[in-house]
Length: 252
Image 1 (tube, rainbow, N blue to C red):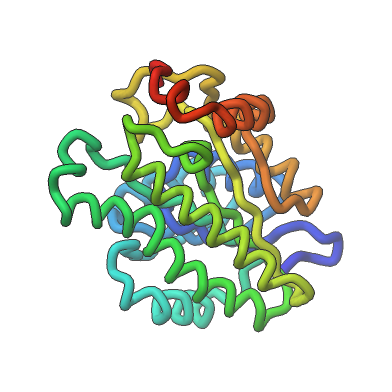
Image 2: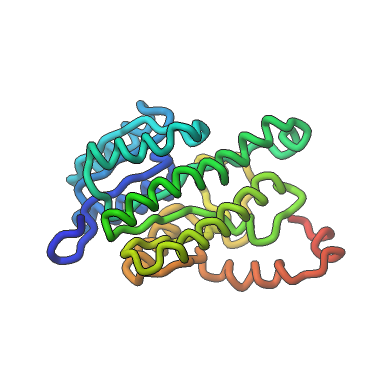
């Protein structure tokens, strides 16, 4: 729980290898967060990712979590709370870009991308929200994407899944109002991470540290929706209202 000064002490990351999430947790640890649980499929990799946090003074534990195994999510959340106690911050940071050119011709591959970005997020999100509701405090920070604001031909499977995820968690935040629990949806633009390493950078591309700084600022303000960088809000507002015949001609 938060300490007597209101500082965040405990953090759970779903998608413990996420560059953005790790940068964010680094900022929380610098401000005296001490219990960090990194959850993901590759235990060795996420355990290694926690070494820098350990050197900064945090107690870091890696635990196994599979976003695609929907049936396991409720038990995972309950077992994690039982093992570690309440969490002040839960960061939902897993996802998959997929391979659009292949996935749009393969129903099961498309379903895996949708599950990783939307269905799996929804099932574990509901389980986390219930625990936050029961403890009466805590924030669920959800890494969405501007890709869901106006779905493009170039990545419509990923984009549509993120659009669903974004709307779901905005609604979940409304459902939690008055309970002491809180949801914050983060809409990053293009970020230089492991997941985007082979892609051409888009306009307004930023680093994980920049996104993390925006997230940390928003946490301190109790924000419900974050655009990062902030200029993405204006850009996406323009793109969202372009006529379809114009939008499809854009080189994006």
